[in-house]
Length: 156
Image 1: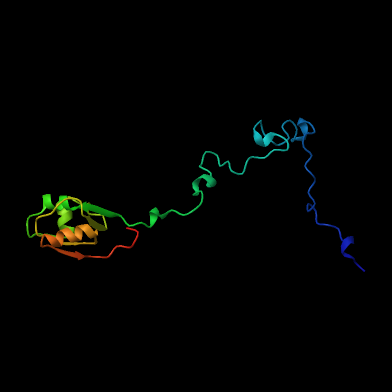
Image 2 (image 1 turned 60 degrees about the vertical axis):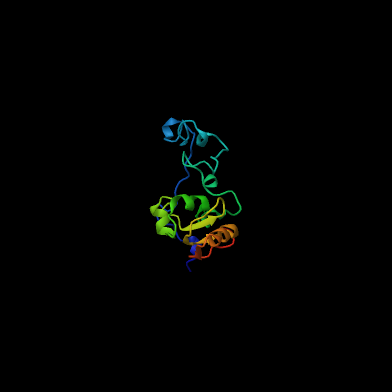
């Protein structure tokens, strides 16, 4: 009966152990296959896993911790009543397009809010995203109208 352990192995399946550091004529003498100097040539050492060869390590590329709202905040252009008083004529309609045309807000700003700093005597029909309470009061007291285009969330 043939047993598994008695079968001869195929030729070349068992590789001979590489003996290093046993003289130059062995082919693995001298530096013992480790090359010249450097951290990898020293015994018992290895390179720090954080070192990425000049590239910024992943631990420095990632945020430290916590949450940052800046990605989710909505840009809002802030205007005061004094700016509207200077720029627009009596009875004018003030909306986003008119504000962009008058160079009061950049065209890419998604929202506009009017604050009540300054006085207004002109009758203006204002349609923007939000008003402060004092701005709304002053515009309506001057005989104008306030319309909210798109109500802002509470944090704006």
